[in-house]
Image 1 (spheres, rainbow, N blue to C red):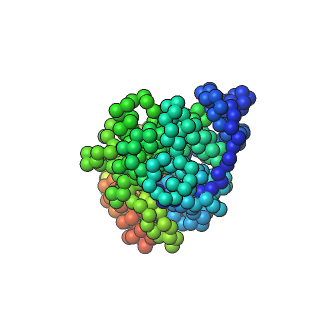
Image 2 (tube, rainbow, N blue to C red):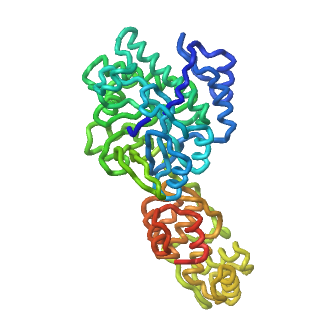
Image 3 (cartoon, rainbow, N blue to C red):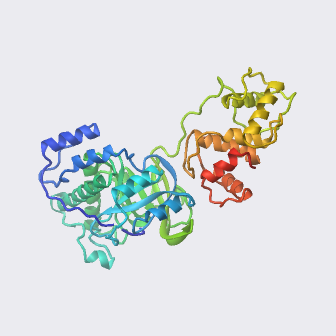
Length: 469
């Protein structure tokens, strides 16, 4: 993985006090499972969680299908702003805890940084890199605390280590404003051999402890590793020994194929098609490399996310009691025209308070007058014809959020309609911003001398609202 933060919070051991458990239960709406005797618990974690919840931060990463990156040190706010408006990425991996992180200093990673990114639509992937496999071959990890391989008590020491890492991760997450319901990922690097029994079983038990403790504290559990080692080890255990270990909710699979997708399981042997198949995967498809967006260069790993329900749009709005307004191509209209697109034009003009007549489907003098009034409003010559420019403008009118791959909702539908009017894009008006919408946005930006980023900013909305094609 790209690299790693510090803010490592060391906590005293002990069973969570009853009053703290009650507070946490009230926050999460559940009764947390009782901690194992002597298990460490985050001091004041419930209080911190309550404070974090009051910030209004959403659980992260939530439901999303799209691009993400991870980098050793959380980028500066100016870098995040530049990449927000110019890169395809809308998710970022951040190292929040773990004593094995390479980047222990995280000068930018603060509660304000977290809340700002979440408010800007970024999905955060919080990562912990603590004890690694006992048989790791990486020199740096061999000099650090590793997962205890002793089999005594069913690898009880490894289980306790996994729970302790979850405690520390939750304490740091809540202090940063990463609220319950979010997914916290454990990074188990793949520099080990799963054929070593004690090494493998202790690692699986450690992960099981991580998962169960996070669930007790109201967080989802994520797990990152290399495809051929840590992922295969986990998948084999899940399928061949079901119920033996607690399994994470989400997998983050490192397989540097260069292709940003869900992973073509039919060509692999490490992860079965049915495993973590319900929007539960992140695919790290490219390792460390430099990318420049908005004039800012960052060394990153690239990822493809498909989590939660994926990017799914809400039910479409209805117009004027059910008048269809979605078309792959919008025709120029003038007096005498008839049909469904005339009804759509009358409906839209009524919404813009330019037309007060009945929706008849006949382009009459009143419809032409309303069109002329709208044309005047947007700076076009006062004519009665519904041109492509008028269609583009009136379909784009409304709020103008920043959007990119993975966005969903009514504004995406407005964008798709406006692009169909502007350049015959032939987009399905789905409300989901995906590859074909991205390509159409890039074409429109190039045609209108805007940076061809695939990101819809205020500047692009302004061109659409003016009717520019």
